[in-house]
Length: 76
View 1: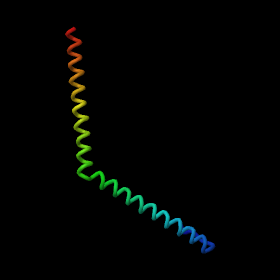
View 2: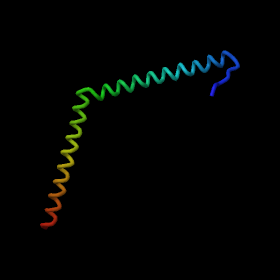
View 3: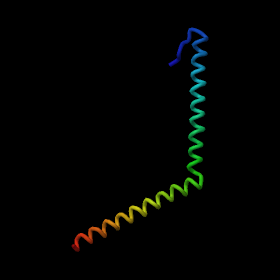
View 4: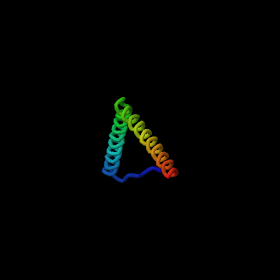
């Protein structure tokens, strides 16, 4: 669908909007790229792995602790 313009000011207005949208898209892309690069840094990857290991250890300890409490309750 083609828009029909009745004046140059309408064209200029739409061009200004398109330029701003393009600039916003460019800045958004830059931000996404920076965030992606930050997540791929070795320090970030080690921190993420460390968090996963800690969470796994806590889950394991809690399950063993609950298992121990259940056995203790059955003996009493």
